[in-house]
Image 1 (cartoon, rainbow, N blue to C red):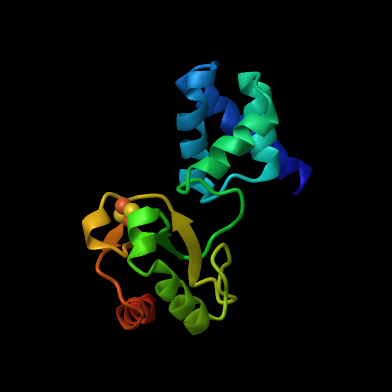
Image 2 (image 1 turned 30 degrees about the horizontal axis):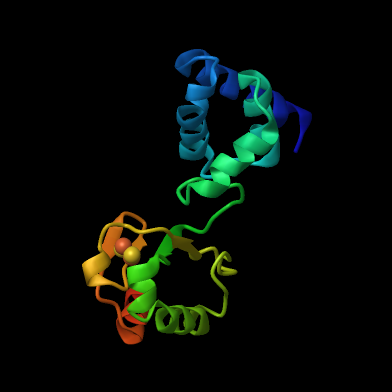
Length: 157
Ligand code: FES
């Protein structure tokens, strides 16, 4: 990353910290603001957030890792999040995983080469009685079977 880019990013983050406040409770809104603008929060941004909020970088990273809606790496144009929590797991989530990974040729946690789709797991999305469930960008799909899941993926541009 160029020095100019680093300075610009530093200034931008400083702006968020000024807006949301300089304490720990600002961590989430600051991270969300960075994510909104850049679609992920790189290492340098994480360090800047830690420095400006006076918290340990590990804490910043662990918050990003915990919330599936925050990313530390670039993602594809579309994000597919499959629920991995117990009800969906018991409703044959693993068959959906196999079908999707086979169709796209990537594993969960990866992005297709053409940048079209990133696959992620998510925790319960509140559709436990209709599992397996997944979210594609902002849209929820329920009662998936392998064929239905693959058809949904093939409709994503
Ligand atoms: S367990 Fe999957 S939606 Fe709740």
